[in-house]
Image (tube, rainbow, N blue to C red; front, side):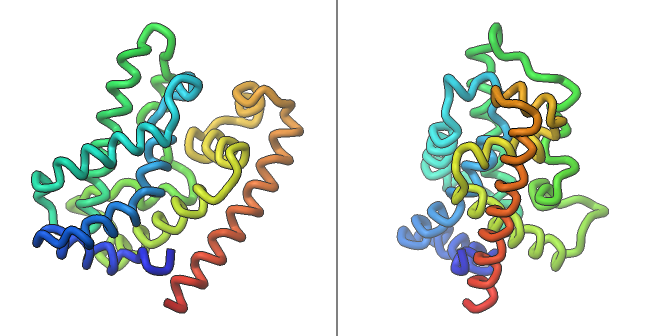
Length: 210
């Protein structure tokens, strides 16, 4: 993760847009974890038994790769915003296929990621009144670290963190979704948070010393 800083992303993006095939491969490889986490967020919970987040991520990365020449942005934030749009579009298409069996809570549809500590950098679309450029860079750095760290966790840990922090569900509903008791889910969440913090600390130290 130390090599996947926003400055490195910007460099790969610039070179890739100039036709550097190696830089393009490095760019997409560095963004794989980010896209996978985005896919997990956008997938409706009831569809996860039918559609794997990694499959949605792979499809989205493939489409982004094929349509790379149509990307008109220049900055990393525009790049990540473009990737998120592709993921969201593909997730919506999947949801339409299962519309009869997978209806999501309309109250949470817009609010995904809204209040979690890791959510600030997910909205990378430039705004008239928003964070300073330096704050955006810091947010992207944190988001890349968070995405990579999440992908290092076990499936149970990723699931409980996704339900609790990304979908913002209370523990009672987390327990229902996971088929466990509330107490078991709270213990699982505590262990998942400990592992996530360890992963983030390691990744941050690697980034600092790179």
